[in-house]
Image (cartoon, rainbow, N blue to C red; front, side, top):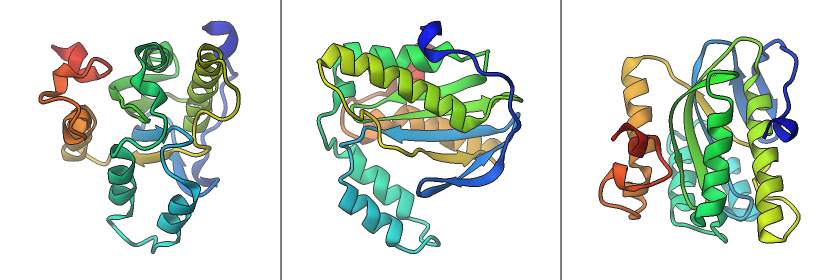
Length: 195
């Protein structure tokens, strides 16, 4: 995994910035909840409609996540070999570029709660994971082209209550989507590792 995921020299963090459609926050030693999804999980037209809705709409991200939780697209991560690739990629940087605190691999998206480490910008970390997994999944599927949607969603965790809610949201996502009855039943999740 090292040759494809590489190691980058330490870089400065960017604070608030825009990359693609979404604003991002990047700072060392910050706990972040990130979500990235497969390219076909949300049709581009519908994504643009969500983005066109008011930025002040507190339910916008929840509506996007509910739509994605419906299991749209080919759901490449439903296949164990592809989910295992994503899982290994998340764990690869744990302790090196970030601290992985909670995570789940859903059929068409990934949620992770992590603590950034100084010198390792969030965008670089997400790019490395998505790039490596895309190459591996395309190779296994005998396909080419984009695997992941170009952007990702991040939210920095403000306090202990927000942290607990983020872990609960991540680990209960398979239950909410109707895939299992209990969080630990979902194989590709930190809830399973905790048991």
